[in-house]
Image (cartoon, rainbow, N blue to C red; front, side):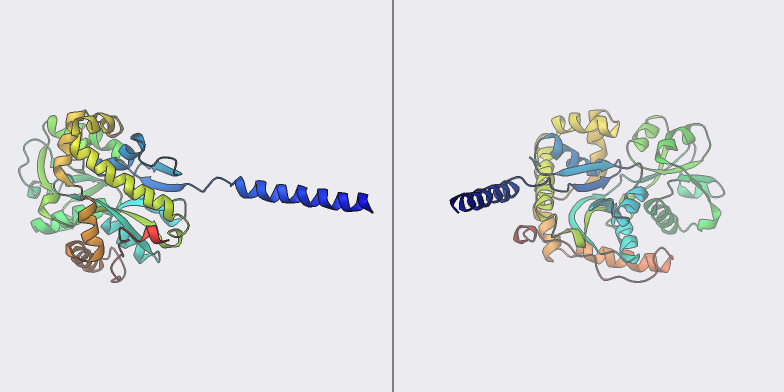
Length: 322
């Protein structure tokens, strides 16, 4: 009898120990996968990682060759967070997804450009000629808007699809007469005599980059999203207060010299925490208004099927309460 009681007690203690052990040893958290392509405005993400601002939070930054591939990965569930332009976000939303904006990374105020060969003076000089452009949503949008702004029918030019990695070589070898591109390619080509014909400062507020999260992933990854956003804003402050050191860290990834990286930042504006907070809580409605205008234009051009409700912003304190 005593032996049976002892045995039951021993088994109870054994299973209690296993229960306690399983409670203490947690399985590793699923990392928050964040997809980007090469673009100076996304560098604070990588700067934050290098400076240790994410600490031990499982955040995985993944670089893709183009924004189209970032869109594809986001839509197929391979990413929880994607760095996209607002027009691309509207396309994602039009396809039935529900993206939420967690960070406005930058406004392009001159960084996106159309270049011409030596001797060209205006965009009209490219009529009847070949213009190289990435096969991305942004490439099509920017070229369409530039031609529209200049009153040039799109059927008077010949778009030539080019991967970003082929931009410089195609232009230098004369395979295209004009090129839709951005830093670092634009910086290199201007140094070699390319002529600036149009840039994104002509369409202010229309090319905006954001980080979006899948709504279905917000609850599961709230802690990581909070760390990602806090790290981002800390890195933005570091970039502003220590530009030379930040440039040394960022330049190799962007295939720039540090000075070229700093020069590229002159064509973009990176909002700080307070600016984002004002956009998220409705004190600043300029981006919301711009998105609505952009959505109407994209419907009229057949880039999306229908008008959408505004893409929601995730307020600064919303993730802390989850």
